[in-house]
Image 1 (cartoon, rainbow, N blue to C red):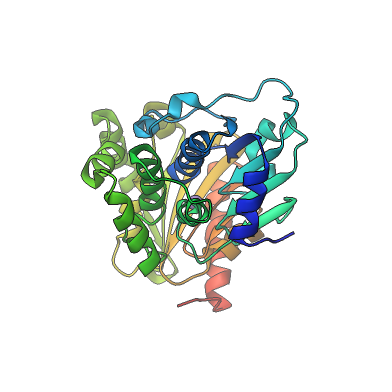
Image 2 (image 1 turned 90 degrees about the horizontal axis):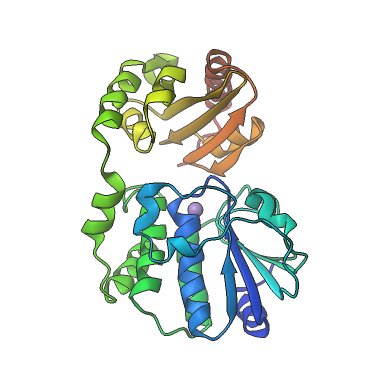
Amino acid sequence: MKITINEAAVKINDAQSIIIAPHVNPDCDGLGSTLGLYHALIKKGHKVRIFVDDDIPEAYHILPGWEIFERPVQKIDNVDLFIVLDAEPERTGRVREITDAPILNFDHHRSNTKTADFLYLAPERAATGEIIYELLTALDVDMDHDIAMSIYTAIATDCGFFRYSNTTAFTMYTAGKLLEYGVKPNLISEALEEKKYADLKTMADVIYSIELHNGGAIAVASADKAVMEKCDSTEGFIDCVRIIKGVDVAVLVKYADEALTRVSMRSKKTDVAAVAENLGGGGHIRAAGCSLNMPLDEARKRVIAAISEAMMEKQNVD
Ligand SMILES: [Mn+2]
């Protein structure tokens, strides 16, 4: 059932014991939104625990309170509300199994499956962090540095540090307000953009692998088994692909195992959320992904075909 931000605030005010979780394979929007809301609700006197069914990448340890996250192990009783952020409840992994509490879901993904008991879905928002900012305003929370830093990081990372097309006046306004609480944008971007020497060298292999298709409208980079074995993080790899002149859709295919390939897509015109959804994944119009149960070479061909088809059908969005 869809609800308004004020109705969501009432649900939260009425709950004493709350669990919050972002999606598996967490990003800074999921983790930062969870921490921003966590710090705010603790301040308001709620009993809150935060869970993520995954490891938290080392670079994200700049988020204040990242070490408070617990892994789901056993069932937890007497929970009044389970808040899911930045994805639908199915994507929280085993966190879904530790509580039977009603689910309140905040998300900005158009592909949200709408299975939560209560859903606030805002696809026009660049990040779930923006939604959390709205929510904290509705909850009349006294903003502080840790809340601001968590939400700022969530917003900044989901809009490519204010470069992607999802960046709106509201994005800039919210980020600007958060800076008033001592957030240092340079420290956040430096910490998130830095790469290990070995990973940067590996990036060269990935750049070398880039192929152009459809007259240069599609660019595909491959991170094969050898690459994945020697690098810790593929963060930022796809950005090298998307900056190629004339490219509409940038693709990174990554080896997971012999029968599983992960695919990330970024676009300037084509609706890659639709492409990803057809392949069992999801995301946003200009940033989406999926996992394919097939070897890397086959997955690469499959994705190129799917994107070419979408381009032919002119499912372009301005
Ligand atoms: Mn997000």
